[in-house]
Length: 309
Image (cartoon, rainbow, N blue to C red):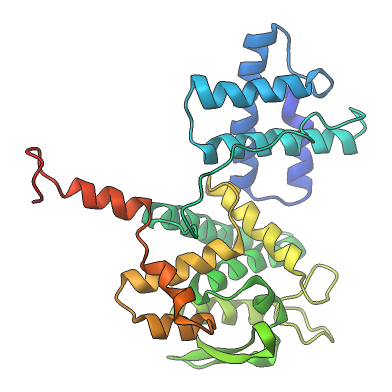
């Protein structure tokens, strides 16, 4: 179907320098909603035509008729919600029809981490953003696009809490050609040293080469040239998650992913606990719990005759 109903919204995203992947993701999800809306209601989609009943019915359609996963459903509802919030700001509608629509609830099986396929998808988006930042003709927009890619790389490769990342100062990062570390101020004012792998060192070094000279000592600064807020970091992570088709991605999920990856590679629990700043090994033992993909791989080991191969 034509994407004409969404062109002003897409321009809004582009004017706010949202990534190509983010814009493409929103457009695909909104196009799906529009196809359903027009087939169901027999009229063209406009912001003013959307009602809470439509959004609830669409959610039910995705859940019952199409049997999509909760993550996919919630991602599409998130796109519709973003479209409606923009329409309110543009004064095209007076109230948000998605305001009281709840997402599909996920059954909790402990901490969530990204599997190998999801990590690959996210890493690919990070690399694409780095390339786009380097080629962007507007230096200011290039700077903030590059900052987002660096934040994602550091979170994935250090397991820092979102607040810990925000509190880092430039002097906290010590970089050498073959080693590096950051001094982290964690919970309860505890200070720990976290080593940096090659990917994290390269990312921080790249950012330091771009970071504007400002009075604030913060390693990561906002567009107001002050210390970045945790909310801004969370927003960066969520946008990268949407671009990688990973709905509701959070900094804490990246922390879980860092820890789970270490455990899967045979790193001892006490080492992982020290890297994460855990006071108790019991907190870290959650990463030895098998995830859904672990269980699927275990079942796949059974042959056609039902015996373990």
